[in-house]
Each structure stands twice: as C-alpha cells, then as structure tokens.
Length: 79
Length: 377
Image: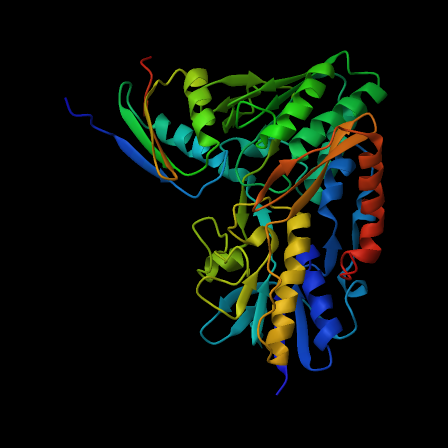
C-alpha cells in the first residue's frame, strides 16, 4: 500500500519553536486521516514533535533521520 | 575621495556602529545615521514600565546626545534602498549615497496579523507598555493570560520575565489571591531553551503561575474574551497580554532586500548581505536564527564596524567575526534573576537564580546610557 502525503513541509534550517508552529498551521488545513510530512534539521524537533503529537492527539506515524535531516509523518486526528 | 558610510537606524546596533566607525576613521569618512524619530529608546525597559517599576521618560534620550560629533544625524524615514545605484531614498524624496551601508532598522510589531489581536495588550512598544500600565492600575482581580502570537519576537525571555514581575506586582498590590496568571507557551515547556526551562518551571509552579504548553495563538475573540490556539484549545481571560507578531521594516520589504517577513539574509559570521557585499545588517533586522535582542545587536555592531573601518582604510577585512554570542538577563521575581549565555558553538547555560543577577541587570540598565551606545562596553 502506498502512502499519500497531503502536504510536505520543508522546515530545514528553522530553529524551535518554528517547526512546531508551521506544522500546527499546516495541520489545520488537512482533513481527518490525511498525512503531513515534515523535514527539519533542528535536533530539538525530535522530542518536540513526539510531545506535540501526544498533546494534540495527531498521531506521529513515521519518524526517520537521513544525515542531519529529521523526517516526520503526522496523521490528522479523527474528530 | 572620502567614503560615505551610511547607517539606517538609531537603536543600539546602529548607534554603536556609527560611534565605533567615527572613533577610528571619523576624519577620513563621512558618517551619516538616519533615524525616523531622533530618539534612542532602551527597549529592555518596556516590561518595567508596564508594571510601574520604571518611568517611560527614563527609557529615551535624544539620539544626537549619544553620537560622536563626527556623525551626522538625519531625522527622517528611509523609504527605499537601491543597491544598484548605492543610494537610499528618504521620505522627503532626498537621496543619500553610500559606499558602505549598515541596516540596523530593527523589527516592527504587527498586532493586526492575529484575528482579534488588537484586543490584546502588549509590552513590545512604549505605547503598549504605558497602556498596559494604566490597565493594570485599574485591575482588581481575575485571569491574566500571557501568550505568544508570532515567532520570532524580540527578547525571547521577556514573556517569562513578565509573568514573574506581574506576580510581584499583584502581590504588592494585595490582589494576587484574587488573580490567576496563565502563561501560554509555543512548546511544551516555559521557554525554547530546555536548560533554562528546567530552572524556571519549578519557580513558576511555586509562584502559582499556570503553564499551558503547545498553545500557539491563532485568534482572539474579544466579545467572549477567549484566546484560541492553532492546536484547537481555548483559554478564557479577563486581561490578555500577547507578544505580537514581528516583521522587518517596510523599507526592507519595499526594497526587496529581505525574505517574505522582511528579515534580511546575511552571512551569520560577517553579517554582510548575501547578495550585496557593501551592505551589512545587524540586530533584529537580520534573518539569522538567533535571539532578536539588544545583546545580539550590541555584539554584532563591533563586528560590522571593524569591517567598515577596514574597508574605509583599504585594508583586508579583520579576522574578528560574529560567533553567535548572546547574553541575556532573565528576571525571576522577588529580586532575583538568572542569565542565559550561548553562541553558535556552545549550548545555552543559566546559573541558579540569585539576587546578584538582578542587581547586575539593574546596574546594566542604568550604566547603559554611558557605555553601550558609545561602544565602551
């Protein structure tokens, strides 16, 4: 099964809390169940995205790292 | 032929550059500083004005009294920068040419970018701080909510400092028991820097200040008196204080010298504009992902000034570059404070809050006028 990403955000070079804010803004435009992908370079984004996902109940369905770039996929929560 | 060194902005950064360049090459260069007000404002004092601990008049001096005699002050707004022709257009239509240009125009607040945001108070302008002071004087109890409506903003520790000073203020007035203080934070901690958050979160709890995490302000409903986050939460208030969104100045946007928010892209070490080697930008005006604060402008100013002095003298650029140094004080209330220090290569550190840091900050605030603008510190 292939995963379709609704929005992909390139947040490389931004420092916290900007990646979280830009993600929160983009998430508002998504339909429940749609996926949002984020690329970030701020090492603080790893714990921040995990905590933000838990707090907002938008599941973090994938995390990864390629060199200095962190990759997250979040799913918009079902209402 | 004499070099024309032009500086836009009479805040801390622009004033230091002008004075340092004048000190070294004041005889061989024409140095001009353009400022729209002609007044130098000590912005770190705004939060004290808001809680009645400082007079507004103590935070402003005539810029002309702070500049060396070799510097010509032009009190007017710059409206357009033309890097091709190496000239700056002023509001009157007059133009000033330059060989070296320093942009130290700071940032501006744009409260109306937040729906309903104009209903909120702030302490990010002199006017805002004075208005908040008068509103607090009338305050008899209720819920005071402090939040952040845009990143980046000036002086990142300010919202945390403010809640501690507010706690002191309400206790001194005997209305703390009838009041709730709620701090809305963009992250799940009090402050972006984790080490500092660990230090201050127990103090917030001890003072009865509620921390609400992952609350990125989206809109304000002044009728129902509620603020809503991008995350979908809502918090009710009796008095709302928001850090407004910030942008670069209009002259930067009009001249297409910045990014989509008007922040100027510069090399993080030389502070030179990425496209124009004879333009430097310092302080809040740049896009460097580092604190927008007077301390950064202060440290950057000497770096830019040294490069301009070398350019005027026809010497190679100096080895001393900006290393990302930041040093801020953070009031924790009850006469105590801590500090936050870091640079590009060293993570932030904060000592345990103590009285001596509060006194150091108070002393710095007083000594500022005789040391910093002149480039003596």
